[in-house]
Length: 121
Image 1 (cartoon, rainbow, N blue to C red):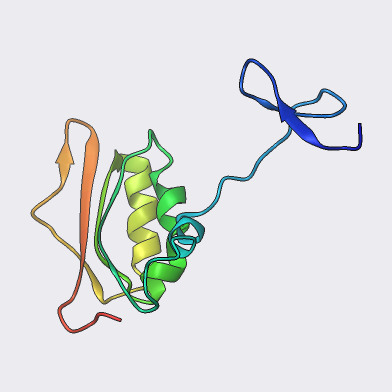
Image 2: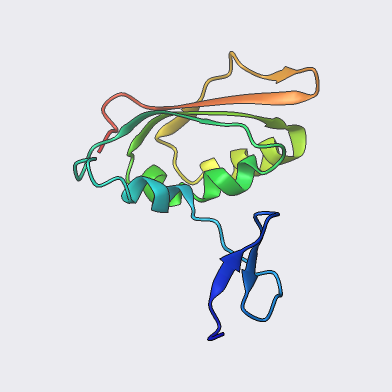
């Protein structure tokens, strides 16, 4: 074989030499940009992120859309540690306001960010 990849019955991609192949998941920015039918400059109304502790990484992968003010509302349900990382990350965009009506519930943080009216793309 010439260095290609294939899957096996476990679903894990394997190289032609039989070793597991490490794949880099696409960032949410890349996924959204791959939607050809979304017009340039259009915004996403609502993004919900809940991913067993990986929420901060997913929100970071939305960097381009957040910087371009293309996300109107962002909701993240996460643990307290990842919530702190998300808050720190989001602080670079003062046009996104954390809705303080949400907060901690049973050891989880509920973060709701809203793009200020008039701050859209």
